[in-house]
Length: 416
Image (cartoon, rainbow, N blue to C red; front, side, top):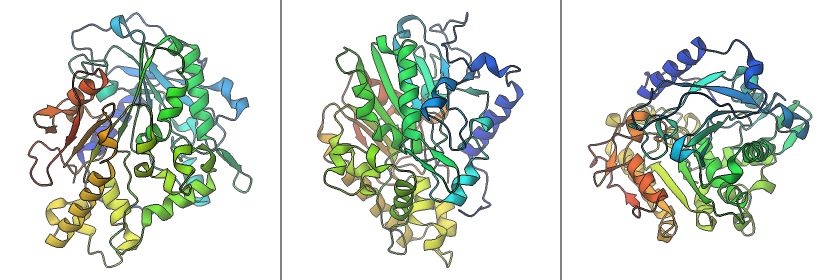
């Protein structure tokens, strides 16, 4: 994937601020966070707004290394836990971190020099924001839950399970997923009254792939189990050249990282493995209640699936895909057709009363962990994302919200 120079976007600035903040407060002694035990603190959440910049320390799953639950370079998997309190003490959010994929030896090897392939490069403390926030004002329904982020270092949405002898790379996302959940069950989640599996982007896809597996961990219990996938509805779409760039990319990932055996059997019993890495072919078979949060004009899919550089050798889409106001009429028509494909893909899914839906018409990607979008704007029919997810999870209202086509929604926070 070629490096591109572009204008700095708001979400990029936010990520830079969080990274700088975490660097400044790294732990002096990593062993404090490596034992895998639930860390208790004297701080208790209250109904008043909690500080938004509390940094949450890392825990390494050292005991799972011998079971092969490791990052691509063989370093231990890791997670961050901010303990719950009060009424939320027996409720858990499990957030699967996102961060793209890799599909060949070169790009995967490159990722081992980053937090997406090695826990050696992971921040020792990170901020929890949006749906992960400890602030009652910012996150009224989930602020006092046990909130966990499982770090992403396998590059196949926690679904691969193989070892590449040629490169020495471990593709053990499935083992990381299973070992992390088993560990969390052992430190208190087994007695949970309510749990929610969530994730954004590649983590959103992971939440879809693993939703029923997550539910199975609580089989026979009275636990309420639901899933939320943010920006995980990646479509098997035709690109601007008439090809299927994302399908080709996913095919490489599925083959290289041994994903096939870990895909939902309700899909693989009638479709090929690559097709079953696409959520549109999975969601109708999921039994566990799930909420899909997505932009109908997902900017990652516009830039990397619909109009990647290799499909646009003349550069006709270069301005449009980074600035919606630069799109001409035919380009807008192409994007509207993509929206229609997304809406059509959830038609059957939305017929289930247990499922939820919030598809807005913003040019964005990932909206549940950014404070401004989680509990602010955008809104559909005057209801924002946090309220919509909360109403669905707690059964306060049925939520099947699909926005009108761009540019009708003036509540959007566009990032291009």
